[in-house]
Length: 125
Image (tube, rainbow, N blue to C red):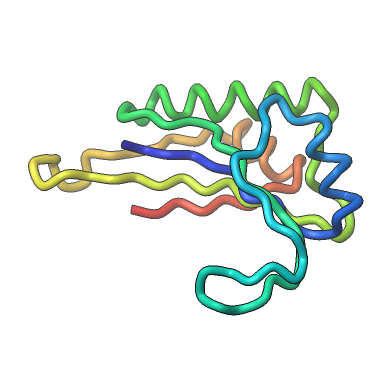
């Protein structure tokens, strides 16, 4: 299953402003000072939003685009002081999958939208 999530973290006030305009509710959130699973203390507040979970990478990209365009239509941006956002895309492959069979083709328009919205991109396998 291929999964896309958005991690947003930073100042509590900026987070609240962004959270109010999102097209979907965060699935997990934390506060500054909370203890992380590894025992360290969080230095800022934040949340995760699930954007898509699809086996088909083309469908995954369609859902990511739709979610980001809905944010854009609502005037949501993550390009504000004391706030950071990261689009995390994780690909999983089984033993019978062809090596290199998974691809994700972001267009220039997609990448421009990410830049304009202040979102970094992380892709893992």
